[in-house]
Length: 383
Image 1: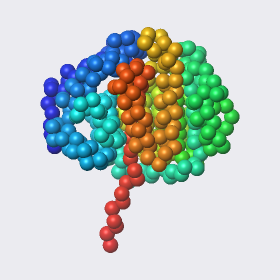
Image 2 (image 1 turned 90 degrees about the vertical axis):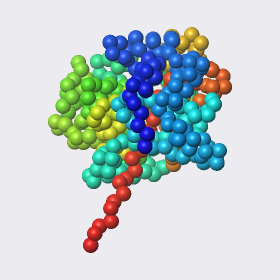
Image 3 (image 1 turned 180 degrees about the vertical axis):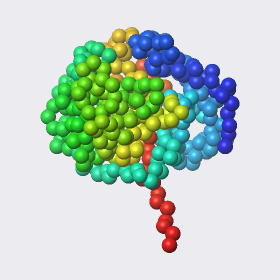
Image 4 (image 1 turned 60 degrees about the vertical axis):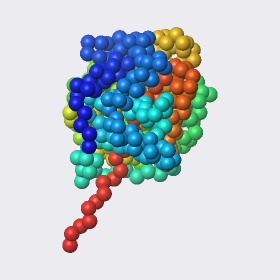
């Protein structure tokens, strides 16, 4: 074990925070996006490389770097289980580098390790998985009282029927639940979600998540009206669906039964570990039966925001977010969600460091991390 003094890592973690599009104290969401997309380190190849080197020097002990280098030279690819702290919750371990321009994602697969008290809770039961299981798809749901261009408006914008994302969702066929229109529906509330998850193997959610002052109050935004069952205070015509309600239920609302695999593609959906008690949406879904939960470390910029704020992208920003949705969807269809997502991130890393093209900036692909919590191993009973 190696202990690292906080004052040695605080400066570089502060620099990382300034590079990310999540709001700093006193910033609005628009201010944060403008800061990160116009002059942030993650969109400049040289400054991003420098930041990665500084993070590595501050956080990776020499002995661990040497072990990873030795494993790579031997042709072995370990799976790193990383238990984060509030100060490192947004750290993209895939970017860290111990040898030249290669990064952590080139050397190992990494997953988030949640506290043992959650993973090994005797009451926790992991839901089954089958490649033929139904898929609950909640894709850019309409939030009551919010227009398409408002704060909780459309994430994806119009999706063409012949776009790669539409084709990927169409490929789910009869497995997709609920049937009917795939995108921008106004009828998937918490009750409809629970019905869609009955017997499902996974959930693919693309939409809005908002953080709060404590993890249990992290909120998923479905098409719930203000009269939806639960305890979370409404926002105008809409009642958000909190992590507490997912895990524990609420007034007139039972806890949600989660499928084996959950993807939460939304801004700051993986904020659990920024709190002393990591009990946000990731923990809630794992507690209710999920084995894998893929979520985001920071705010995801929309394609409209990228187009407007990154002149080098312009219209080439189209597809950056939807490509990430496609990659996460494919990873959760595979036998190894962690390794499959890492393979996509590795491909993006190679394009980024070889070309410097902002279309492959880690501001998008570095945002995703997967928490893995297999079923607890039962201790043998004593006779």
